[in-house]
Image (cartoon, rainbow, N blue to C red; front, side, top):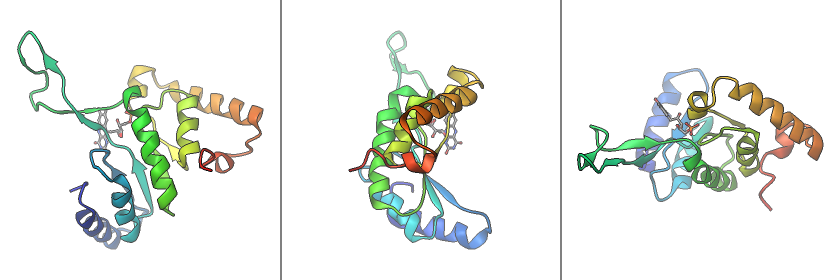
Length: 165
Ligand SMILES: Cc1cc2nc3c(=O)[nH]c(=O)nc-3n(C[C@H](O)[C@H](O)[C@H](O)COP(=O)(O)O)c2cc1C
């Protein structure tokens, strides 16, 4: 349903009607046109989009000649998907007015800076909590603050979308 703009519009509108808290819709990258999905969220009254979820993927065991996961497919996350996520946020930022939360492969301050410069207002860290450890949050924050101070960015807002012309 996350790849069909009409379904996404219907679901986000229904959730907005049902709750009083801000509604952020998480977008799948497993679609040819993520911007049309983001627009459906915005048109339905969604408060923000979160991009991206995992990429549909598969690992095969040569010894067993079968997919490793019993479900056959799994969700690919971590560093391999960062360029896909950054591109998605970049394209969404060019077309949407609502805020974007960037996620996908963020492990250090440079990864976070990429997402912010692509257009993210804030970011999430998933797999790196396991790969690096919980200190990843303070490391990213400290690194970002150092970078912002050296390059004259007073706040995240001044960095947001900086990679766009
Ligand atoms: C073990 C695991 C469980 C996840 N569960 C969910 C989930 O329940 N709902 C969701 O929207 N995304 C879920 N995700 C996707 C993450 O929120 C995130 O979008 C994705 O992993 C990319 O970010 P990362 O590279 O920082 O992990 C999950 C990811 C992992 C690795």
